Length: 217
Image (cartoon, rainbow, N blue to C red):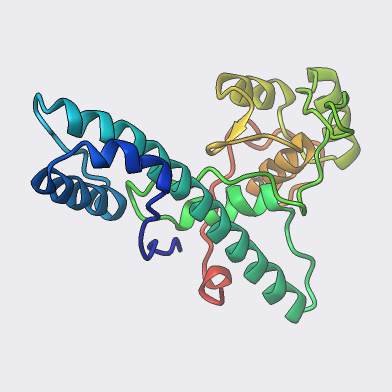
C-alpha cells in the first residue's frame, strides 16, 4: 500500500560540511545519500572524519523527510478509503481502527509501517488536556473497560484487553493509542460481532484480512 518516495531533499544547512570535502568525497557522499534515501543502506566511510561529520547532518534530514513523506502518504491513503466508503454509502472506520484493521495487515512481510503525525480526523479520547486545548490520552481502568463491554454486550475480557495494551505501552502498531473504545470495538468484531455477554475469546487481539476493501483504494 505504501508508495515509494521519488527522491530526497538536499538542504543548504549541510553546505558548510560538504564544502570541507574534496570533490571525490563529495561525490561519495551524494551516492551514499541517494542509496540511503532509496534503499536504506547505511554507508561505511571508514575513518574519514569529513565524510562522517557531513553524514551526521545529512542522515537527520533524510530521516526527517522520510517520516513526513510516510505520514503524508498515510493521510492520502486514509482519505481514499473514506471517499470509497462514502461512495458505498457506508460509515468509514475512525483512523485508529482503519490503521489497525486494514492498513497494517495489508503491508508486505517485513515492511515497516510509517509513524504518522496525528490526523485531524482522529478524535482523541480519555481525560486530561494538553497545553493549547488538545486532549491527552489516559489509559482506561479495568472497571471502565468492563462497563463499556457490558454496555455493548460483546464478551470482551476487560482484564485481557488491559494487559495486552499495557504490555505494548498503549500503542496501536507504531502509533500511540487515542481511542481505547475504538480498540474494544475492534476486539468485538474479532468475536464475529458477538453481542451476547458470553466470553468468546475476547482476550485475543483482532486480526483482519482486508479483502476487497483495500483493493479499491
